[in-house]
Length: 393
Ligand code: GLA
Image (cartoon, rainbow, N blue to C red):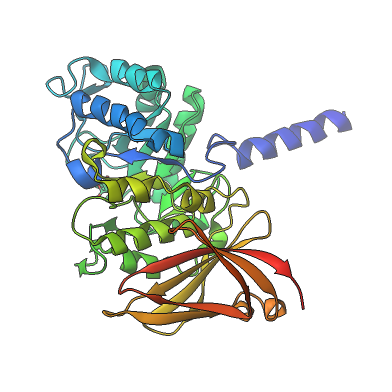
C-alpha cells in the first residue's frame, strides 16, 4: 500500500511539475528564419517556399538554420467548427501542403498565433481556442509555435501561456513553444517549464540604437536590457532578445556583425529576419559564420554577460563547454578607439594566464597573450575572440 501511494505521489508531482512543455527540445538556441521583420503581413505560400529554397541554396541550412517560421497574417477566419482558416488567396494550397514542402527540404516549420482574442494584426487569436488550434497545428505537422500577447486585456499571462503549452502537449506533436510576451511579466521568472524561449523586450527594429515610445528598439538598447537575465537562460529555456535584423539594409556591415556577435553570445535564438532570396555576400558571410554560430550553439548553454563597462566601450564574456572563453570587445563611441580586456576581468585567478586567441570574424589565430589583449575597434564594432588556455603562471 505504502509503495503504491508513494508511486502515486511521485507520479502526481511529476505530472504537476512537467505538465506543460515538451522536454528535450531546443537544447541549444533555435536557429531559423521568421517572416515578420522584413515582410510584415506580406506573406504567402510562394514566399515561404522560396525562402525555404534559399535557406538550403545559400548554405544557411548547412550552417545550422532549421525553422522556417511564418509570423502574423497567415490566418483570416475560423470555420463553423472554430477551426482556424488560412488566407485562401495567399495560401491556396493550404498550410499542410506548405509544411510538407518545408519538411521535404529537410527543414522544420513554425507558425504564429496570439494569446489574446486577436493577433497583433487583428487576425483571429487563440484565446479560448487553445486546444483546437494546437490540434490543428499538430495535424498540419507544425514544429514550432510563436505565441504573441496583443488583445489580452483581463487575461493573465501565466495562465494563458500555460493553457497553450498544455494544449500542445495534449495534441501530442513536439513543438518548440516561443513565448512572445515582450518581458512585461518577467517571463524568465515563470516560463522555464512553460516554454522553450521567451521574449525579454518589445520589438527590435533595424537600427543600431534609437527607440520609439519604448516599443521599437535598436539592438544596442535591447542588449542593455539583457544584463542580469543571464542566470535564467540554459538548455531548453532561453532568453529571446528578438529576431535578427542582419541584411535588412539600415545598418552598416560593422553594426550587423556586432549585432550577430552579441546575439550569439547571449544565447539568443538565431532567427534571421531578412530576405534570404536576395542576400549580398556580406550578409551571407555574417549569417553563416560557423565559428560565431558555434559560440551560440555551445552545449554548455551558459549565456554571455558583461564583465566591464567603461561607458563607451564594453567587454563581454561567455564561458564555453570545453573551458574556452569567448570575449567581445565593443565600441559604442562614434569614432574608432582602443578597447582592452585583462584576463582578471574574467576571473581573478586567470590574471597571469596565457591564452591562445582566435579572431572569429577574421578566422585568424592571433597568437598567445598573457594578462590581456587590446585592439582598435571601429565605431559600433565588436571584436569577437575565442580564448584557449595555454599555460598558467
Ligand atoms: C508583435 C511581436 C512581433 C510580431 C508582430 C506581428 O509586435 O512582438 O514579433 O510577431 O507582433 O504582428
